[in-house]
Image (cartoon, rainbow, N blue to C red; front, top):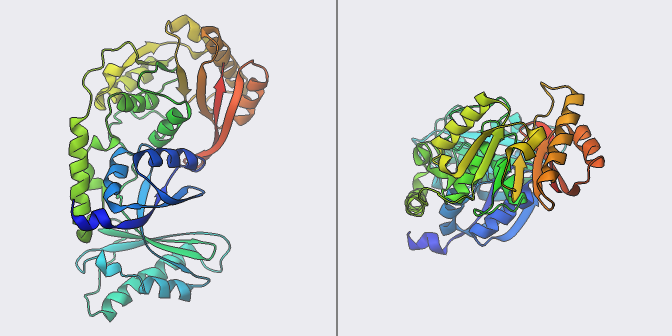
Length: 393
């Protein structure tokens, strides 16, 4: 990597699944030394050497998008926003022949909308180019070469560069789409909450399309999630001035490929169980697509009678049970109750992590079982308010 990258520290922020900010912070701190980390809802702001950005992009399993902060200003009205964006050296990252778009968001009460912010900021970018004697950059709202983010949090404006074309949760290995598929970044965060390790026996008794065991398989085989699909071409913004950075990311990915473990023959495998043979076949397809089907034992079975299907005592259990959109509340009560009681029959001290939006059912069942509630975390799964529960038998 060029020396200027090694010497340069930059301010970044990551978008994360709301409620899991501290889980992401823990992961990123393991990947790279962070400075001045600040947690906000759905955001993690931090400073790090630019040379470590390839490691973050390659190895993070819980981050959705990464942004490079270009400027920060106090702004109370649209005129302030226009001035702040016009004073930002966008031309260092946007070539005249490249298209751009402004994506705006805001938090707090204002007399204007996010659409107004995007409009004013976009005009400021164009006016800056014209004032410098540069050609007017074309606007492309659907598929821009460069995406500029303007985030107004109350009166604090952050102008940044979106480094990712797609959210990093889109792994690229999913062939079978379960109707209630768990987001990969949430699955990875739940594995961290369970303190899952490669040597652990993991059980997902309601595995659906197998997202949790597949993410666990990537960890077992030391596979970074960026290896699937045309990652560098489709998922990173081609910002010419950062070409050395993209080259460094490609080098990091190549090094990661060399460290991928071979076929797993150990008995320490994940157990992927589901009552639906159709979903289990889909889980097999997804795990095979990710190259981790050798890390999983697939079982058709009923989560209400785990002890009758699972011989091994799992070290950890991580699962995404039905929430009730296709199941009446009394059946959910029965499912959750027997899931936890049958798990207790396997042994004491097993840590289980599950996510649900049927919070009333989960709370009621937990009150009527002898499992210990260790933690509950409010999260948003897409737009669905949910809780992640961490319990111990």
